[in-house]
Amino acid sequence: MSKSVAAVLDQGITPQAFIDGMEKNKDTFLGWYEGFEWSNEEDKSFFESLQFRDDLRCLILMADWCGDVIRNVPVVFRATEAAGIPTEVLIVEKFPEVMDQYLTMGGRAVPIVIIADTGGHVLGQWGPRPSDVQAHMIAFKQANPDREAADYQDNLKIARQKIIEQYGEGTEYQTRVLKELRELLSSF
Image 1: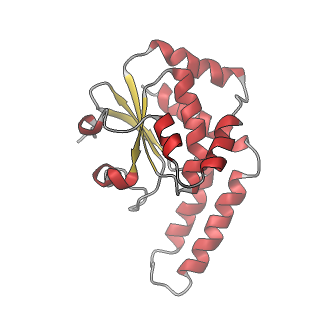
Image 2 (image 1 turned 60 degrees about the vertical axis):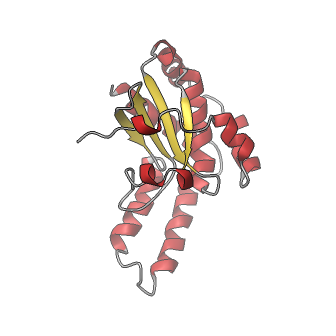
């Protein structure tokens, strides 16, 4: 059965309303957002070429407390702005039933970027982080299936540190996010 977000289309908030309402991590989020630069003209041209499509909608499950949201969503916002894709934010705590349809390895992880058509039929999704970064969490979860194990929390801290290292200090990860979004959008 295919997924649908028809019931929540137009019930989210705008990206600007999300930014204005941020209670946590706002300065860091804005730093990534305002500091965004296209690393190559090919990516920029691809997203700008989507301005002629009026059949796409973007919904992003997210929250301001999440580090992956703070890093990745500014890139997604810039891409959807360039593409002219109407975008709305679904705050996870306000849309738990939607979040539960988009679990990552059985758990809630954000952001989840959902691309749908105008009727709400889901065409694809991305998230919660670039695949090379996510690989560290996948490896952790596969190696640590027992959340009650004595070393679970220590191993989780190690995995989170690897994730931070994989993101890196600069904006290079943004190119990987754009590449994955481009691949997704090119598939329909």
